[in-house]
Length: 288
Image (cartoon, rainbow, N blue to C red; front, side):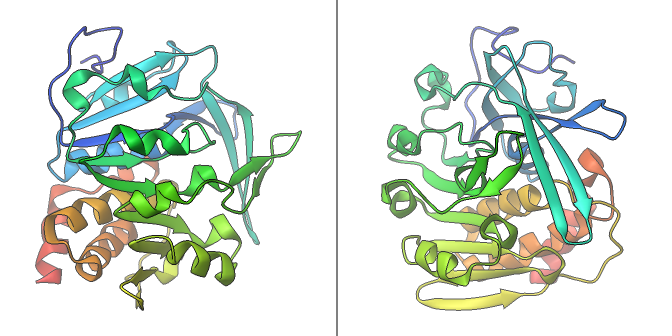
């Protein structure tokens, strides 16, 4: 089945979960590439959770999107696909970006998607104008902040930067997720962002997450599991959290649910890490 991209369809079906951000080509040790990015992992997780998902992205038309056949895709054609190399070290992950697709133009959004109940903005390389939220005044707006907290050295090495944009996007959002790695553990930076967000979640790898809500902070430890690979775990967490938050309106319950699914995900590699129906059902029962 061919993914439902702009090259295959002239019209699109309504959706209830819109994901905007670059799909990525992730370089492997042998220089082959695998599909990645928040757009990929979060969209597939949202689909597994029962959502009708659409992705607005930009990439080279030759990019293999077969793994996303279950969702609709509107692809803005580009010369390059955003390309990363991720290197695991004893001191954490080192990343390099070698190519970047152009910024995404929300004005090209299919009409059927403009009223999506949940809009998830998931940039990986600053490809979204922070003002994009104004296109979705009636949606449940959710943010993965990572791509707005990155700069790139001349050699492509990813470096963390402070939030450099207007605060309007943060204040308009219903929830935002970032990792402790995104801010290099800077608690002052986290407190500053939390003060501007209704709900802010900081993921902490094997330690679970912390949720800032209603002038309160709660920690949610992750179950102990055997790590195989954690690529995409933060994006799986984000989609699970946003979906469950919309359903329950309870950040604490959403965090418990998302932590369980993210922990399960690291026991498998790459796109095999997307939650299974059995895992989703078990996580719901554990919350109850």
